[in-house]
Length: 190
Image (cartoon, rainbow, N blue to C red):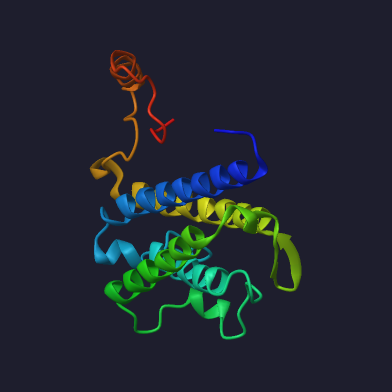
């Protein structure tokens, strides 16, 4: 990688895409393991179900990433509070929202050019550079991805199929990586 500002911005945008794709892959792997009943289950009165977290993330993605460079990231037609209500929606409808939200995010991020990284966007009237806005969403979606994985693992208990290095198998994983010619592959579980 050369050290020009454009190449650094290009690297940043590509790495952000890689991290977002990894978050989606983790969440999708967890979601695939739960039944329809578990998909909508809450573990206590104050918690959200996997369905509600997905619905919230999808609403956030649609709002933040639609017309990302030209309109406020909090769209006037977003009704955030309704993202935490399941009103006659089934799993398929929520999964479609989820996929649509991710498509919006990926299409937008893939369209950004290195020179866009220093531009300013607004979220709820507050100015952010593109890098700051992307970091804000990386953090937000990482938090919710962790919640989805935690809930699915909790709900599946002993039936859970690990999404990374299985407990008690770190040494085996490390040895398998040492025997490969490239060492630790980028994007592998930590």
